[in-house]
Image (cartoon, rainbow, N blue to C red; front, side):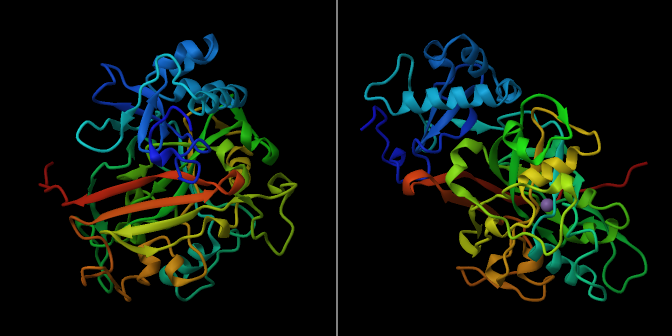
Amino acid sequence: MTWIDDPEFAADRPFGPQTLPYGVVTGPGVGDRPVLAVRVGDHALPLRPLAGELGERLADLVSADSLNPLLAAGRPAWDELRERLVALVTADTAPRGAHLLPLTGESAVQPVLPFTVADYVDFYSSRHHAENVGRIFRPDSAPLLPNWTHLPVGYHGRAGTVVVSGTDVVRPSGQSRPAGADAPVFGPSRRLDIEAEVGFVCGGPVRSRVTTSEVADHVFGVALVNDWSARDIQAWEYQPLGPFLGKSFLTSIGAWITPLAALSAARVPTPGFDHELLPYLVEEEPWGLDLKLAVEWNGTVVAHPPFAAMSWSCAQQLAHMTINGATVRPGDLFASGTVSGPEKEQRGCFLELTWGGREPVTLADGSERTFLEDGDTVTITATAPGPDGSVVGFAEVTGTVRPAEPYEARG
Ligand code: MN
């Protein structure tokens, strides 16, 4: 028994002492500045009041208003803080300054975006997703383009519209070209979709050419991502330069960042390739992560995407995105790309799940869906194996679709 009286903090629950994800909360009991916290079961444990227990260096890092100073501090500080916090939360008696704030109920605190997103990159690392999208968007050519098995394909996204879980999703408007039409039209997207992804939150020293063996020095932790996507806008705009307005209107991220250090038992070999990779992409022991995702559409679970099926690892992604001299810096976020497995019920976006809108899914209330309707809510959750048979949790990423804002032409 520890001093924390929350049944959800047991070691067999996803947010037990083996997980301790980091977030930032505001609201009742917090005071006038947001506070760093770790999640313990269904509570937040604010860290600023514990600063006196942590030593001068860590005290400064946990007293900030966001995770950014901690992200910049690097791996030695991350490991030291985690070790101290595990000891504090598993102690028999409460440390001086400790108080728990509820994450549910009337007096719940509110998680906010826990760090300022610096640069945002989105990859395309599921072979199953890439093949399915290729078949849907380019039915007359090979599903995988020739580069796909030689490099982790990605694009630079829009950091300024990364938002915390729970933020509403206003349906975007834009250009699209209806099937068979000669000219594009403008209006609210009619093919609004999700992409269930896993995001990696970066920190440590600013560096380029990070090798695959150095990834743990630059990846602080992991959060679920929903890369909301307007497929009709995307299909018209994406050639030749890739995704643009079909993606940049909003990207949601879970409120709590699960430390990479909590995922040592979740490492699994990646599926690999049937040819040699260029040396900078080679890992001595390639490892992915055995996250099991679930996608809920208005409360009905419609997919179970397996992250272990991803072809490119986070180490290969980070090595690739910095090999040209581009730097990684604290607050950078890179996401995996849609997580899809080989089976239909493992597809992590509705474009694939409904095969371009041709095969609707039926929700628990009997209604049918192809793409998102106004008022729909999508929630992505995940767990991973933890040490000694425990389960490591990831904060859900959820959002509700709101109607498009009216647009009036103005010059
Ligand atoms: Mn994506």
